[in-house]
Length: 356
Image 1 (cartoon, rainbow, N blue to C red):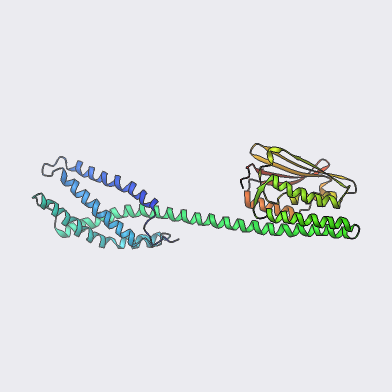
Image 2 (cartoon, one colour):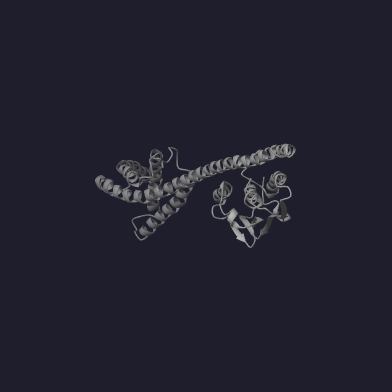
């Protein structure tokens, strides 16, 4: 974690200014208060002493921070050590600038600025500057560390976003071949018994794939568009299982504009056909239900049968769960359970209106 070689970001400068100005105003007021009872000191003298200290200390600290802006704040020991190493230089520069300034101001008023011996001045100002610098270096270090942490956190969040997008793309890439292979197997099985139906299915599959490619450009879509894909898929499966399955769509109108992950429901319907319809010797009812429950979107796909045939989760349901975890973390769920004489795949998502 390295600070840039440029000056402090505006946020740090504003925070420093918000602390710096009240600090020096307080220093000036305290100096005036301390010397009010001394008849030999006029009111403007402590104002001059502290304001000149403020002026030159500000300039020197600003210059020091400009020259050391590129230093690494992720290692506090070396950072503070190198900053403190500057203090003798800063102390000498401070004394050689602020005292001539005070002497000049006194001379303009016809007065003489009296001070201790120069060795005493250098020693006293160095100790004072060490304490002063320690305070403000701690504040500057804290502000810079916080700014660096925020930058690192922003970069990490951006990286996590790209990683999640890549993972979603990979999961969708896994899902589409899986769906395609199943559909082609369906067509292949019909080629031996009904070429006309197989040809019709192939045309419907081509239409579905084109629609899937258009929908696959985005990770999210509306439930309305997701159901259009699902209807296309269902028509293909109805051709294969003609007379063996009845589809019951129970979708509340208010749910049609809900936001859902693209191609999330197709594996659920496919699972119902694979484990419910395909393995049953009697006609099966498959029901898709969608409703809004407060701030949740509840979608379920159920089919007649028992969990014995649907208990093994394949790539479709596993893919769905992984996508939900990437997009919603723990805020979404997908369950598979037996309820009386039906098997229910129940999906629960946070309610959100789809915005293209």
